[in-house]
Length: 393
Image 1 (tube, rainbow, N blue to C red):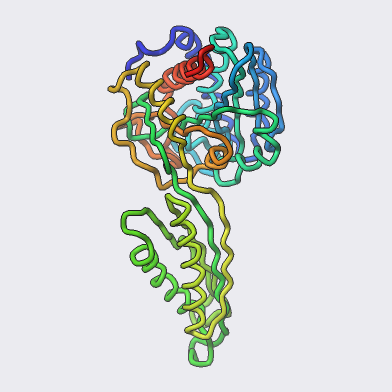
Image 2: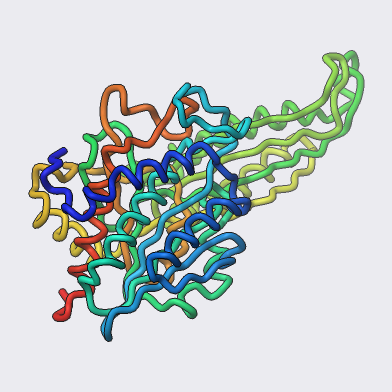
């Protein structure tokens, strides 16, 4: 990472923003419970001259800065933490038992705040800037809730961008990918209803455990035989619950699945085949089955033109050497996908470091790399000034 690329005005804010980031880290809040974080974010932005709207998507914050007439741009950061017990031992480690910022949302929030403070002082753009601080990204649908609250009707955007840190890549290096970038994520509960009985006379029962076992094995054929081998598809059976005693055949059993795809077409195939297969397997044993298929997150699809624009900004500023080569799609999901489904934009990544700084996300030993904060904030400033330049782009 070349510290010389950091804007001087951002460098002057770095220490202040690191303190703020660590304050948020020490006081993490779960999805839709980000009351203190939202209050802190709103207070900072109001002090810097933004028009601040709170309660968007329950605990979300949108801050608007208008500087003349022109286009509108949205930048989004997530604020929520995870139900994980932190083990870093850092001086600013979580003070909330069982809750920690294990995904770097504290860093994303501080990075966007740093850019916001700089832009409020410099006013180096023409148009309207919306800073969107989203709650409940971690599986609770915070983006969808903000949209239901009229996000883009109340705060229209010609484009929207978001940034997420990725351990394992050099700190401060930026990555871009056009098209399907992050997988859909659906949750499926399959309840098998059989006939309970005594383990000594299994022929007088319909064993739902056996049915579940058959379904698990049959599910493997969907990815290998129903999905194009060149496409990505994942079916994970993460939970099976049945019975409490070794000599009692339970009357029912429950399976829970995580299902992922990188195209809407494959997503539909998986839903259809999982449902059909579960029903067929259960029927073959004389059991009944209920399939509860919950659509959680759609495929995150980066729009080509905004992605090319975002990459061009980074390349012109940092050079090719600080861009992540051969970035590939992720099988994790991200609810920024809901926003991209309604507004052109792109989701980019910033390297969180390698070696000692490469602890995986959602790990109790993870911490956001503060060395990335100034680079990320400087990039946001460059993006805003380019997108909202008097002549456009």
